[in-house]
Length: 157
Image 1 (tube, rainbow, N blue to C red):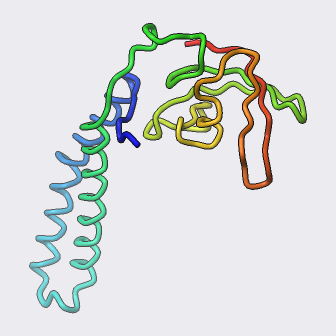
Image 2: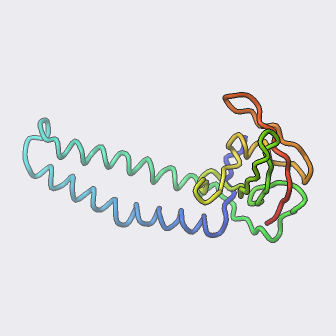
């Protein structure tokens, strides 16, 4: 499986800005906190030092993850994508066959997913089930309760 993340230009810029913030603002703050805690004496009983070191470890993990995502990302121009099939960056109007409820989602990379903005990851169960489908197709999505059928009503960019 490919580790490539397909991002919008806005998503790429947002992640890049977050990485810059972590490296250039948060990292120096934590280094300063570690230095100040170290100056307070015995490190074996210094809770501030331990907390600062833990925060530094979590920050470095976050930085590494963002660097990995950005290093393996491709910025997509949605104007160049085929609108006849559901792909990354497709906005899809679907209808739940069981209850008739219509939903609209945009399929994005995992790093850009935000359900409040109706952006779902292509790696989510719904995203995986919709990829490659065309208008009129029925997508059978396996969920913990069973299977949900969605009819593809519309695909746009």
